[in-house]
Image (cartoon, rainbow, N blue to C red; front, side, top):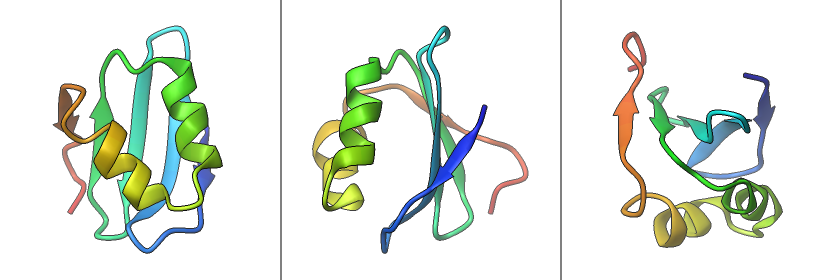
Length: 73
C-alpha cells in the first residue's frame, strides 16, 4: 500500500487499498491502524479535508472496524 504524508497535527500518513477497501492511517504517535470496508470516497474525503483530524473523528473513527498493526507504538 502506498502511503501519502499529510499535513495534520493528528495524522502523519494515509494509504488506501482500493480492491480490499482497507484504509491505513499512521498517527503522529507512531501507531498504525487499518480500517476495514472503507469506501473510496471516504479516503478521498480524508485527503481533501482541510482538517484531517476532524474528518477522521467525524467520519472514520467510530464508523469502521479497525485493528492496530503490531510493532506500531
